Amino acid sequence: MISRAAILAIIVVVAAIYTNYGYFHDSETYHANRRIKKLAEYDSYALQGRLAFEKGGANSVELEQALRYYSWAKDGYEGLLGPEDEKVFKTEKSLLLITVKDNARRVSRLKELADRAENALGFENIVTLDIMNTLAIEIDDKNGQDKRAQNEAKSILERCLKGQERVYEYEHEDMMMTVMNLGNIYFAKREHEKALEFYMRALKGQQATLGKTHTSSLTSMMNIANVLNDGIQDFAQAETYYKGALEGFESQLGRHHRFTLVTAANYKNCLTKLVDIPALKELERRFPSIADERPYNKQIIH
Image 1 (cartoon, rainbow, N blue to C red):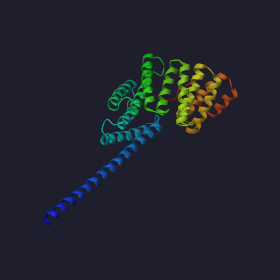
Image 2: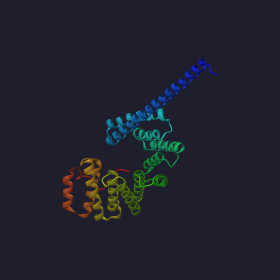
Image 3: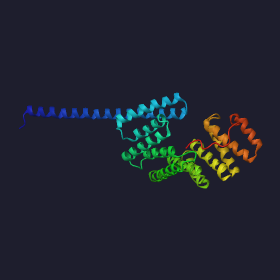
Image 4: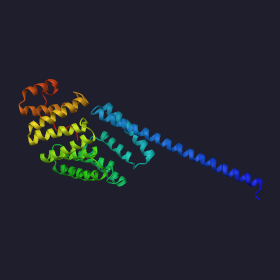
């Protein structure tokens, strides 16, 4: 027969087990909740950094704010998630674009970052593909003088697009950005029909995914107008796309935003070729700053 003392001892042990289980269970819950809160805090820093960067342009105050927020986010992510997490690589890319001004150094750093991301995350990872896309944009020679750079950028973008087509089940905005960037390269190479094909695909996907008035959709509209105006020389069709892009940018971003003004300047060039004097005068009345603008500005963004 078990003695009373032994029974009491068993009760004490069982009680201790339940007490400790409750402690550890509560402790795990506490740490899990704390981790979630910290991650939300660092995500907020990254978002504030992106907003400041997009708003800032060449504004040094806004860029300093973006740098500060991104730095806080990266330090937090590294401490919480480790140095090879997606969020760390993504934030590091944003910091690099702010801090490294020289194009050659920026390309070198992006290549190193892309290699590290591919080794840690794999190539068919959305962050790796995003970094590769950015690398291609930086490599691409905007003036069309360096054919080797253009071909290298094109090769990277084509590889990115194949990866994105396997990763995404629909026309994702990142994939459409890659399509648009390929269109930009074909435009620079003066392969206008091919550029138009890619711009049209980008526009269709962006309108379906993001909506007709999203700035990415409007940018594709302007790119289509540019290739029709400058390359294919279908000025009537170009006017239709310029008009739609201009109305969209003015509505979404305001009359004085850089994207709106660049679109207006390009539209002016098209109207000049059409010799549509009344429309040209009305455009210059609405946008006085484009009156002395040199004809034809290239694409506003990649």
